[in-house]
Length: 602
Image 1 (cartoon, rainbow, N blue to C red):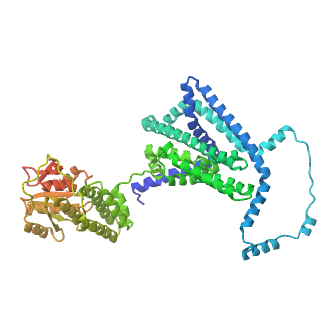
Image 2 (cartoon, one colour):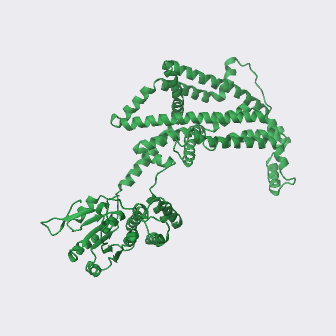
Image 3 (cartoon, rainbow, N blue to C red):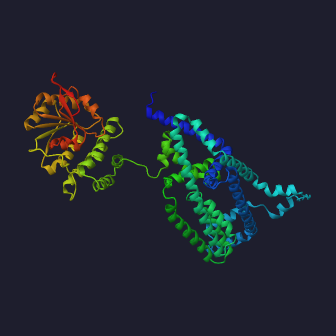
């Protein structure tokens, strides 16, 4: 089975990506603390660097930063532990209060479904007397615990967390101390041949991620402080705990605020008799989130360049891969991948998928709307383009490439004939509406260096493939309308001799062979040759409607057909017809020793 290059590249990318994801899932216990340590390093590098610039040695700077961080974390943990213990002590009372308040909201009469559920639960329960007789008598063993056993009982639930914290702290220390050596090793692994891309990518990741994490941390700390102070002013129990949770959970994109709001809102329902305090908590979170959302663009703007959908999808991916820790790391990991996707050629797909401002050519956007059978959106796009550019430029840049792409997809079987007919109909209706537009610029004004011909020449054009070519020639006529010049359009249906006879009846000074790529070049070349034979005195122009094409290759394919000029856009064709050859068409001059023309650039 033969596989084309694009499919092979896609399969290779999927294989490599699947292998990487599998490896990250298998080695999650190793990679999670490493990723957390790397992100902490990016966050602390600016602070350590500032201390170094003040004259402190690197080791002392790292020690000062880490000791300060550990002290703040310990103090915060102590305060939060006390508030959490107080909250746990009052949890049964809060549960009863919430149940009572919710019961008051329910209707007085139980519904049929509730009655059936209660009856089913009653039938499923064993007789209390029989259960009491069969229940074994509990025996309690009491022994004295020493200090180490009591510490183990206290820290038991947090053993894994403390172990990961210790590993992360140790890795962070070494990464901060050896950050220059780590960068050199990465460059060495990638290879000196790609040192430019590697160094630029590392620099961009370090700058973008460091600035983003610092800004995000400051924003979240401010958000958490606001929530904590607001909860304290409302009278909510454990306000510091809610502020800390709000700051931490806001690292989770878009969902963190909802998660951090749910617990204090539930506690406010339980701790207060009315609904005033819950409404105040709701208003507090809504106001704080609204203010932060408004300030975020001013703080770090769109420096990440990541779309909201990209953040959400990335958050789901990292949560699936690494659990809750992956959800917390999703923002930072997404920024890393997006920066790498913008600078590493092999990771360009990531930059496209995660990026917010993905550049899509207007002709592709217009083609997509037409293929999606949305002509209204397609015409709106053209109207927006006409507001900024001339009609001629819009045709050369958007409409003609779309006609060319539709013809190519139809030949390849990717587009049905009715879809091509729809595209032609939309273009035809749009062209019918163009003369009625007020203030429309059909073509750019000619430079002062270009002088018009004394008398316009009669021009006949052959539409080689019918619909598409005929539409392009209609566009050409519209661009020529201000000069009161019109091209006579002749269909290429029938034999070349009959077409040549029709052209002869018009007695044109210029014959234009209209060819809309990508198919039909052989017939267009044959038609050009016949026109030269039957009308040797007419100026013969070959129009290859693709302004991005390599014109030297077109001339080479026409050789030895004696076309006087080759044009690739409406602008060139208009300039040539109006006697302004400064439109830079390709001139093909016949060689003196041959009856046929030898292509050469004018």
